[in-house]
Length: 199
Image (cartoon, rainbow, N blue to C red; front, top):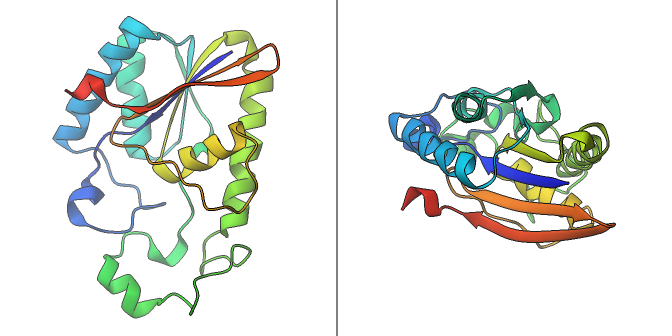
């Protein structure tokens, strides 16, 4: 089974410099262009048999552009949604620091931000969707997953069997892609965060 993990294109929140998370911003004009370039690249090199997407606009728009290029089924999976950052969603970084300063030493991983989820809940959600995908979508052989930076980082931790709380984080640029394979009980990383389609 091959998993092609894709981050959405540039969103309006990137230009505004706000905490995005569950704030539902659409793609920018550049984001649409990035998604179209990604879709053409994927169609040529790794065409999926099904696309799974977060329901947030920036991911769903990116996934729809990919679907238009490939012509396969697109399904929304709620657990692919970005971190629930609660009261921070849509606030500028400055506003957030003033209204909701971090506790000294940082927020413990089991404590949720107000109206949001904890890091441990987020990590468990990634485990849940990872195991759902590799069991319920196995028959599709090649699955494209369109999601968000934080969700993708946790999904990669699930794939790599890393612990719930560790020092590792995996960055993904706009429409960056990771290619993973599960074969004969081996979990194989083919590449991480390529963006050569944007060059």
